[in-house]
Length: 259
Image (cartoon, rainbow, N blue to C red; front, side, top):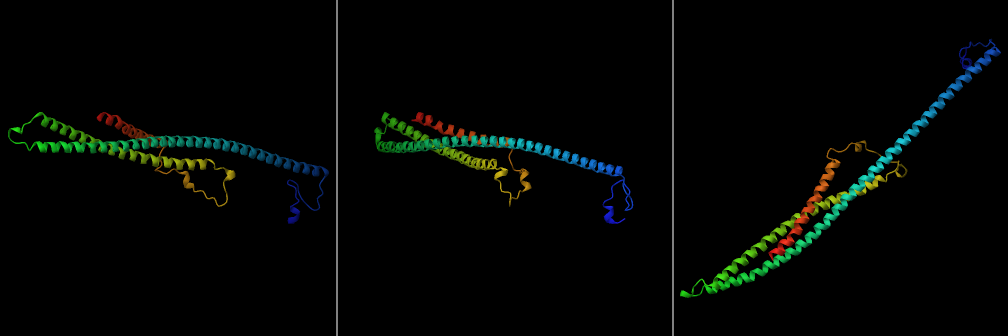
């Protein structure tokens, strides 16, 4: 049997160039081939239906995950924006408190300077009265009043100078809190811009050519903060700033009373 002849051999039937098939054999062969074709078609249709079902399920899962990611992005952007705005508010309060402290410092220094001339006058008066001779060198009421006034002015001057130092220390603390918040707000502004851009990434507007994805990006860095740590740090910076604002404003009634 040649190779070309074997290609036309029907499975289950003997083949010979001298053999003639009966009409029954021909019909049976056709029916057999049709049944095979129908079976293949049914299998193909089943594969197509299964593929379409998998495509639909994949599309549904993809859309579901996409919506979840979008909601997470929206929530994250809202959280970052909220704490950024809270940081801006605290910075504005700190700046207002620093301006008030600077004004108080000027007033205190001026008040301290105004004490120096009366103190000098008291010293000169006591020096002049020390020139008295004999029985006139007496501890009279003018002498006691001058000494009392001199001690009072010295105490007031010391209070003013101490308060100036306290104001300067408070200004240093307030500036440090402001710098921490400025860094935090700057970082949050950058994170806000990054997350806003990342949330806008869509398959339809992402270039596919020349795009290389680093699989290592899917592994979080060991130094990364958890959400709880991130919020705790942010809240701590703002609470620290609020305490410094309160301390700054508390100087006003103290100084007014000391006047």
